[in-house]
Image 1 (cartoon, rainbow, N blue to C red):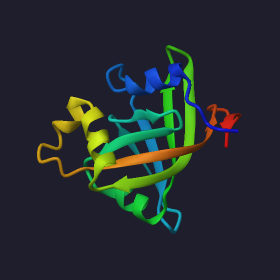
Image 2: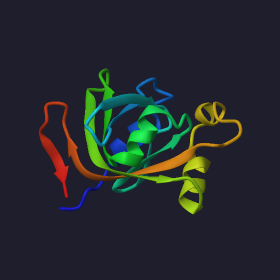
Image 3: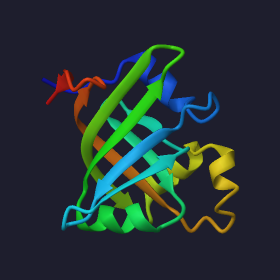
Image 4: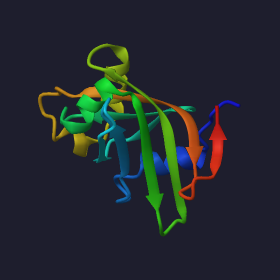
Length: 139
């Protein structure tokens, strides 16, 4: 089965920061030490990928270099919508993909990176699950 984000998922994720429901990114080091961070720039990048602008290049960023397996949590309680997106992240410090992500990043996040030193990160989704752990879609 191929992963395909629904139009609803795309819309909610693309507007998560503005609607005050930013996504959380879970990473782990190669030794398994976990990290979680808000990603206000999370976006639906394609039908089966999420992406974000990594401006801080701290904690979770170094973990992405060591261990590309991640989970993204989206939850909008008033709308009754919540998903976990599992996948593999790739970091783009230069090139066309980085430029595409930067162009689509919300201004509030770009304003925190005035020198544009950030990296574009693409997450290729392998599984989408409910908060209860039920698989919704899987490769």
